[in-house]
Structures are given as C-alpha cells and as structure tokens.
Image 1 (cartoon, rainbow, N blue to C red):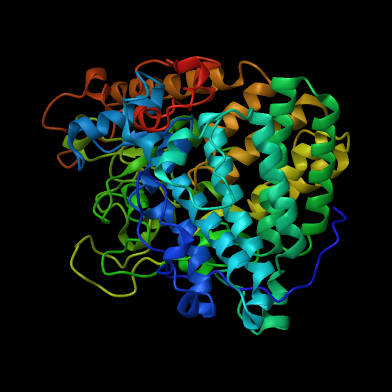
Image 2: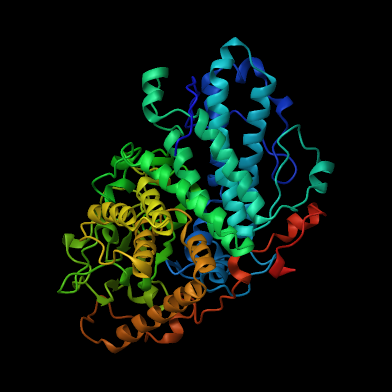
Length: 590
C-alpha cells in the first residue's frame, strides 16, 4: 500500500492507566473538562496512560465476555468447568447459551452487555483524548499531538470493529463535544454495517499516516516501542477491517467492485509489512513471557507478574486451568483438536497444537509442560479421547472436559498451591500478530487472483508450524486450506473464531452451520469412544459412579441450535434500549 506517511514525533502508549476519571452514566466517561491540562496534558507519562486507559476497558472484569463470544460461541471451545464452579449454576448456564446458541435473548445474559459496555467505554475515552488534544496544547504538546491521536484512532477502530461484528448496526458516538445524558439518550444506530465499516477503515487510514514504526520510537524519540501501538498495529488492523468490509459489501450490497478493491489494498498492505514483522520462530513461546513484544507483535496488551499467576486482566482468568487460579473455561473442542495435522502413526505434528491445547493429568500443569514431553496420543494416567486425557474421575463424571487453552495458561512453577509465590504470570494478551495478517493477506491474494502469492504467505505460516507446504495450491481447495490454517493459527487466542465463522458464511453459505454441527458430533463421538473403552481403568482414574451420556449434558451442547442469519449478530442488551430510546434492536431479535 503506497500511503504517504507523515513523519512526526509521537507519544507512547503506557502500561498503567490513571489519566482518565471514573465512569458516569452507563458506559460514558466524564467529559474532557474534568481533566487538568497543566498536570495531565503536559506530562508525557500521563499522556501515555490516557491512550492505554482506553484499551484497559477490556480487562475491567469484562474480558471473560470477549473470550466467550469469540471462542465458546464457535466450533473452537466448550464452556469448560462444571456448572457448580465459581459464578454458580446460573452464571455458568449463560456460557451454555453461547456454546450452542440456545436461548440467547436481549435480557438473557450479561456477556453481551459487557461487550457493549466495555467497547463504548474504550471509544468514549479515545474521543475524550482526541478532543482534549485538539483543545489544550502548547509548544511542548504540539510535537506529541498527531502521534497520540493516531494511537487513539487505532484503539477506537478496534472497539468499533468488535461492536459492529457483534451487534451489526451500532451507535457512532459524536466525536465533537461532550455528551450529556439527554444527548446520549437521543443517539441512534441509523448507519448500515457497510457505512460503519467505511468509518472504521477511514479512521485506520488516518492512523497509518501519522503513527510511528517500531524503529521510529527508538531512533527518533529515544523511547522503547514496547507497549506502544505502531505502524504495524494500524496496518494490520486495517487489513483485518478491509477483509470484513469486503465480505459485508458482497453480502449486503452485492458490490463486487468494492470488495475487489478491499482485497487488492490488503495485498499491498501485507507486501509492505512482511519483511518488517518476521514470524517468531517458536510458536508456543509467543504466549509465554519470553514472547512478549516479539518480532511479529502488532497489537498486544502488557501484563505483569502477580502472586497468583494471574494477568492484569481478571476477565481472562477463567480460561486458566484449574489448580492454577482459573476455572478451566474456554475448553478446546475435540473438533479443534482433530484438525491438527498428524504423521503416519497418528501423532500430531503441528507445532501450533502444543501452543494451543493442554489436557489434564493428575497435576494438570506440572512445570507447565506436556507430560513427559510425549505425544498427546500416548496414554498418560488415563483414557484418551482423540488425544484428550480423561482421568479426573469424579469431576469428569460431573461433566468437566479436563482440557484447557494453553494460550490462556499463565506460567507458574511446579505445584498447585495458591499460596503467594514470585515470578508468576506476565504473559501479554495478543490482540493481533503477523501470523494472522499473513493469512489475511493470503485470502485477499486468492480473491485478487494472485494464487502464487497466497500460497507463499500460507506456507510461511505452515513452515513455522513444522508442516510441509500447503497440499492445495489453487481453486476452492486453496481457499479452504487458508481458512483451516487461520483457524489453527489463532485458535483460543483472543476473540476471533465466531466472527470468522460469520464472515466466511457470508461468502460461503452453510459453512457456519456445518462447523457447529461438527462441534456437537465430535464431542458425542468422543464420549462414545470413552464409554466403550475399558482399557486403562484403575483405582486412580475409575469414577466412583458410572459415566453415562447424561453426565455430559451440562458440558457439551446436546445439539446445534444455530439459526442463520439470526445468529450472525447478537441482540442489543435490553438495558441499552431502555436508556437509548432511538436505538433499534438488531433485526432478528425485534
């Protein structure tokens, strides 16, 4: 992409929020006049915090909603845990609504409200920051202004993408002037999905013009780039936005010409990025402390070590394995596990598996290593179902899948005690990596008629996963291989798969339904194998009561209750409709 970049002296994105004041009515923050310019706007540290405070809304007790929406509401993950686990039965049944799309309604769950609230808090904070920069700046401030505004644009676009992809037609908050409660109540969601994506893409185009590269942070400003958004953040998010914009233009407007322009722009973006952000060699290590701000990092949230191995974001703690300060939610499905490539003896060889999936043993995370560094298909103290160990006798019988997200598991020394220890946690939350962007580029190149380029970018990702070149090099088979590798590359990482299923289904009707059917079928096939396999039972792993299919009713979806296109979006929360009288409910939930 041949954008003319304007070299500026930019400002950082820091790690500790504290610049903005507390929230007022609903999700909006206090207006900019409550800030103290002499203290906040002339202090680069406080300026840094102002940008980071916006993205921190992801972790204000609401991060769990994003992982639930993006992964549990897909073929990648089950609810995990058991109904009586932390949050009580009622809370855990809300997870069930998403894992098979049963009973989702505007008033049925807190999760959709959390996504709406956290996203608009973040957007409002970016708007406050931008207005403040335009209103209060002196000679010192002028050298930071454009860069900080660009960073705010990246964060704002990120949140709007989450909102549009989740709810469809949403509210655009006014950029000029503070919003009073009365004005807030009169806001409307009268823009179409394609108009909203035009707004998002333009925000990112503006960000690309001004935001510094990783190198410019150090060379021009004497500041480490780590913890900052940078040119790669803006370019990568722009490529992702354009991919969704293309699908929406085809689905809603049948606008092939505009979709083709989106695909071609993505190709130019990825060409400009591929040499600047090389893939990190060790896939599993990306999600450990050693992988923080690695070579392919585009957009990640810094975390810190704590006494219990948790991250800064309490909302992501539920994905941690049990006995390691987590609830074991967002459990990988058997369908996901079955997608990883195997060798001739049936052992998984895809390196991404070992960076994505954990399965339980007596001590689920002893040393944070796979038991004996062995193949997951070998019998390790219990029966295996398609490579997943089932051995916690009574929890298993109560419906606990005993498999976990490796990406969510925070490092912790050997031992399962919750007693305070040192050097725990601190693995950053990855929102966007070059591995994903290469596959975005591969799909765009395919649609742009550049199969050779699509295959080259696809094979870069496969090589890092220790796999041979793509078996498909053209036609529909190539596109499906790109979709498959993208799923395995970013599975359980952030909040992606549900939105990917919707996007792909708009291009290839039936894709999402087939995926959700396979999720259910593979789980029941696994249970059948387990119930019919008497090998390996012993006094340690044999349950105190019989295991039957009925025991699994609270763990896995009994059937696929997806409705298309109804479940392309979620309902706008009832509380929002009560406060914002001009906002219309999502089409299929009215």
